[in-house]
Length: 425
RNA sequence: GGAGAGGUGGGUGAGUGGCUGAAACCAGCAGUUUGCUAAACUGCCGUACUCGUUAAAGGGUACCGGGGGUUCGAAUCCCCCUCUCUCCGCCA
Image (cartoon, rainbow, N blue to C red):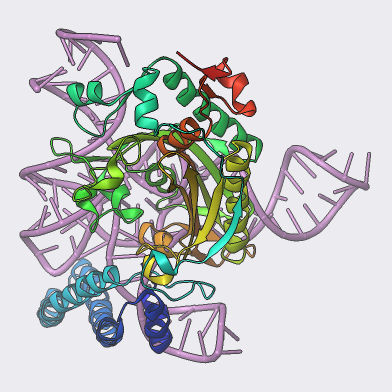
């Protein structure tokens, strides 16, 4: 969430900037500034009374000890009056604070100044493209048919065991999947990320910290018995490592990577792009996360983007990098690059990564701060994350783009991980 | 799941109603000494909100797992919840 102080001091600017996200914040911001003024007044009044009250209480103790009981009784009557005053004001303070929090949660993050206006994915500028779209032989198959042809991914079996969106990888697809995971992790480690194996179920506070709660509740699998959520992305446990922490200036940036399965209910998203591996309830992903100093976070966003670009290049996939426009960005992000690879048989661009800077938006809600070099000033850190990469669509594109009549060839970088060069019947 | 013990500052740990935001020690930071390092010594060393200020200094309030209660006054007494540890049961 945004800082109340910042909003109060820059009300017009906030409203203006949120227009880029097609969000009309005027009403909320006005309410917030009003409530903030009221809150300060209440807080200061209550504190004054409380202070007097505390002083009196101390005196009472002393008076009793000195045997001046009548004076002590007088003072006790005084404390009664102060107590009533405090009792009267306190409920309004807490309701004001609650209301402020509610409203703060309704404000999306402010987009970075380089984020273009726009309302839909059509308005997203393409930043860079790379790779060559392959010419497939006539009769080339989409990956779901290849999966059946070589008996490597079984959607029906997943259906039987669990349900739609939970495919079973068999034989060489299973090995390819594992190879990709190891390849991505090793590459991340070589780039300075520390590998983490986090829990894949998280509590409410963690889900709230990264912004899955309260809004996207319906997107997560929920274990009611224990009040836990299956993670939709490793971003949640990784970033929450730093919840309620003060990171030292010299420890920035913190760079983490993790492989985890991810779970998404994808409620309401039925239709054409759910075919095959395109959209699943459970999928594998390697994630990268950075906690960074505010002055350096956009530098990190660019280097994370280059890092992801490096990966797709090494896999030989045709890709494009897209800068999300204000209207297409997530609620919490300040700037996001999406990566899409072209899956040549279904002739579709598939999103395989999304790299975002959240600035202090997540940090603010999870109390993630860093201590400035002077050792005194404490401020919210910036958080970033990106997929590097999401496996199923990479798998889909690899299978489709690398198919020949004889089989599917494995990209050279991966061979030492798979232990085979081709998938054939 | 059953029984018991316990949650205090970055860590260890003292503290059973007022002088405790909290001893002591360790770690950390700054300085003195020393050719460097080490040791020794001195000082500093929680967070949030708030008042104040260009900024600071400084003042105030809250917080000793979370919530409620008793009391003029609670880390300390009472109730509920939660988490951790030990033993038993189950088990990869």
